[in-house]
Length: 216
Image (tube, rainbow, N blue to C red; front, side, top):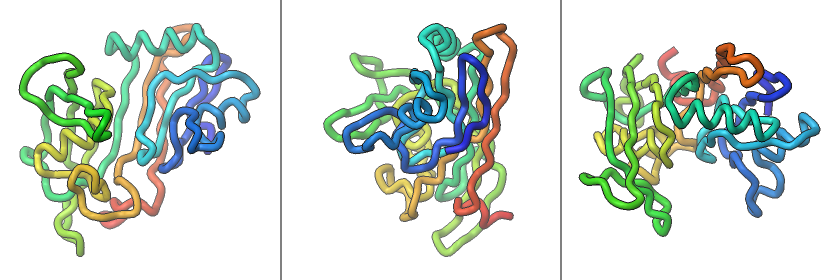
């Protein structure tokens, strides 16, 4: 796990796909927060999470004050930006636009669902997307999509694209074709630094094993 940025309050790392964001008995200490504690020699506090199957840039606070400051940015939708690259099965229609849905996460099934009305446990979900390229492959037509995420709901990107019949490559849980990993990568984060409020941008290149190398 590489460090992409670090100051006295915050560290940004490149999370490998398959690693949990937070400690769990099954992780055996090989999660992002535990790894940051070992790398930095201090406590680590979660600000946001990436699904276990998702890799890329992730920000972790190094003290409670920084965690509160960054969490407030996310809550207000000001100063903290998240961008992803994904490969979807098919071609999004239209090629670019916005998605806004109501999502409900069913804990028993471990899945999120798009629902048609607000009720207990339902949350608003918003993102913008732009299709960068499409090409035929042995798995059918695949498209590379760039995504700007405005809310961080459980499995949000995966369920919103699946609901529109363009599930992510490798995402069998939401109807995508088979693959070793879900083709979703956190490629760019922006946030305001707790120490002085200055904007910081962190980028994280996709690994060569991801399916969008088909389009290079």
